[in-house]
Image (cartoon, rainbow, N blue to C red; front, side, top):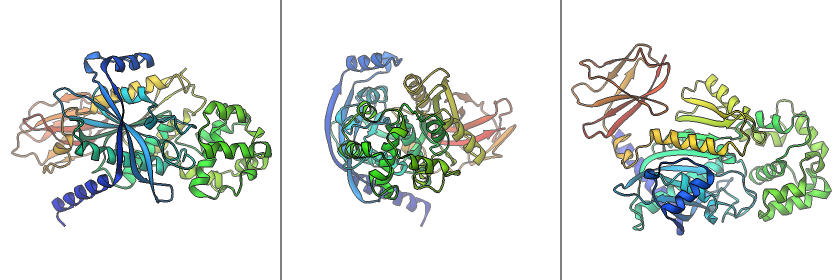
Length: 484
């Protein structure tokens, strides 16, 4: 099959998949500029009033698959800006944090501030509820990487179908995808990027940047060490039965009954709370207390801790299956955290960075945004950084999909990595504008030269992109290279 035919087949498959995802979409709210500003002020987000747009939100129900690959229907929300003199917007997938109450989710008109923040300046903000929350039945699949990813991607597919077929909005998806989320949402954001790259879905989801915020990526390392640090108290103790309930639902091999894991005085309550899915974190904490030896079987804890490599006990095996620290992302990745977070250990990001760099990653950073910041106070600086970074890479009001990966240019760069000279092959006899851009979106204009060699000796060492535009200033190619 020719390259063109292969591309057509991919596009047709993508269209067919999207059409199968959307079940229904219903309006949630309409947010005027004054409402938008009130939300941003309430959270303490900085903004330029000239960049803001009114926003409309919708509940989306859509087809996806559960942990066993079986069909199921899930829910989420999409926030769409009302743009003036502009018809294209990038997609931002925003993944929300831990929720014990299945009704406290985007499709139920919660997380409104986050939806507005990531849409009002010109993004389509897609917000999954996750499986087991919202309209999806069963126990919430908490920190379950595969379904966090598939719930997100199938929601994007459903939203794209809506945008392609509706007459209620003039906004179109421009082809760029950005991914972020906080706390559990940090884990879900990382899981979504990994799933895209593991399954070679880059043609369908062109991820410009991923910013997982304060996520527990290293569950059998950094997060395990935080919880089981020799002190039997952990102030977020409900996370333990919540994640065990999730992995029991996903793998069915952690225990036969709740009494095997929990003390008799708590086993029935934990089962009822998990099954109902309507008790919030405060109610869970009031029922459990912070001392996990007070509600878990001592022998279970001792057996978990006795598994020195954390790879043989069924609970550790399940945790390890949902680690997200030991792989090499191709897309630009920024893990953002704060140094005094006692709920999600900063070492989750630090260990992930070290491992990824050791494995050969070239465009990954872990940034400590506030050394004194805890899990709550880190939210605003982390989300602010993420959106500012996305803005530096977004091509708003531009149909990026039509001018990026689907052009006929056949361009290569060498050597790569390069130290002094970078050679461009494939532009001979053509008239294009050439720029160099760093991972923060800063652009360096390259003077017109009579040869196809660029002098990059003065650039600081790091990861860069060679951006090629035509006479209409449309971006045609964006090629990554490393300056050593």
